Structures are given as structure tokens and as C-alpha cells.
Image (cartoon, rainbow, N blue to C red; front, side, top):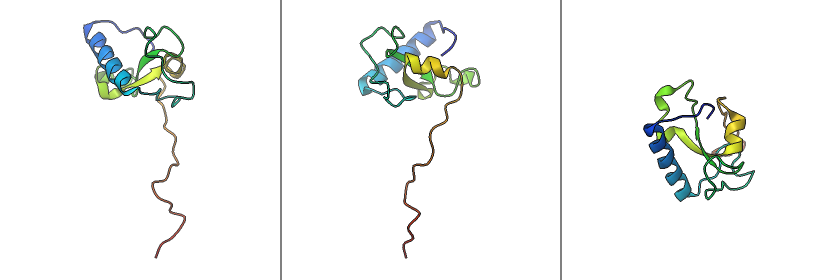
Amino acid sequence: MGERRRGPMWERTRQAAFRRDREANAECWLCRGARGPIDYDAKPSSSPLSYEPDHYLPVRDHPELEFDLANIRAAHKTCNRQRGARVHIDALGNRSRDWSRRTR
């Protein structure tokens, strides 16, 4: 997240994302739960495993998406801070079909 966002619009967006992610028990989208579950009971951003909303597309590059819930993902505080404003590249290689076998 980088800079500290302030203001009522960000606070409403942050709270809506928290409610959505807590209800879904969403895992950290960056480590995919490798560090453990997000601690939704901890005060937001208070501990390494606490919840922190992360912008999928960085606000620096896409300021128009700052308050768009579709651009906000659940993350551990540690994972979000380590990523910073870098763009996350999803892993590729999961095939939808095994194309190595030909069917006739």
C-alpha cells in the first residue's frame, strides 16, 4: 500500500473490503496462504499476519482504481509490504486441458 491513505472515501472502501474478505475467509492472494491464514481478529495492519487490503493494480499506475473494490485483494501485512507497488505476476503453466495427448 505504501503511502498512508486518509479520508472518508478510503475508510469506507477499506471497511467494505475487510467485511467482504473476512466473510469469505479470504486467504492472502500474494502467498496463497503459505504464511498461514490472515488473522482477521487482529487490528488491521497491526501484526505480520493481520489483514491489509492490497491493490491488485497499483494506485501509482492506476489512480482511477483506488476505491474500486474489484481492485482490492486480501493480503497479510507482511506480504503486502514486501510487494510494495510492484506489479504481481501470476504464475503461468496450469493447463486447462492436457494437450500432450492427441485424441482422434
